[in-house]
Length: 286
Image (tube, rainbow, N blue to C red):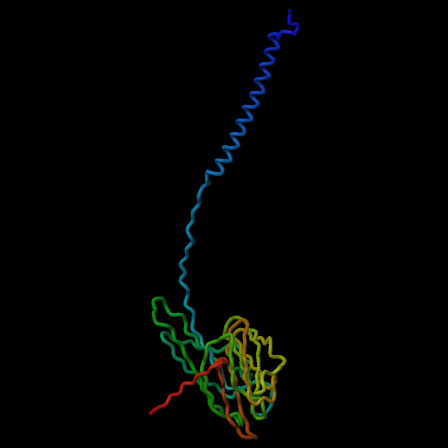
């Protein structure tokens, strides 16, 4: 019996083999591409990049020593002159004697640039320049002032320390009753302007006093404010002075007149801030 199916010719066999080879080549190419992708992933996962190491930056700084500075209260102040004119203007009747001492070094003394004192007598600023390199002793600076005043009813003796400027001061002194004049003198010895707020207390507690916030004290200036202008009729006062900006020195200048007789003058510097406990040191001599 004869097979009627067509026998493959050599040409058809060649085409069949070529097709098989093309399919095989594609499969091999796909397998190679898959292997290459796997190898790339493994390389990226296992192989680390370049390691950069850097130590912490170091800088040696030798700070420049700062100058020590103290500011004196300035002359005793009152309102008005000897003839009774300019009753709202701060004025003085003399010039205080200032003494100072420093170790080591020499004290430099210069007045503030401006003052509300119409006579132009400004507080003295004491400065101890930075010491030279190699000095091991700690810089020490101290100063004080004293003044005898004799000008009609403005008569008496007042002494006070020259102190370091701070951002806060408590003045536990003063009165705004009849016959007593209390002036708050605020000085700014720095090169930065100061904005000052006052808080006033009397014997009955805190006083709601208008105009006591946002007082501007320019650099190198002294401003003087009558305490009675903020809170009249107070027998005894405590004033908190707070500065934003440059540090300040606050003092309270008080003068007393009993009827027409001089009752004395005083300059009160800052006291210790309020605390739940207070300790006093008593010194006795035998």
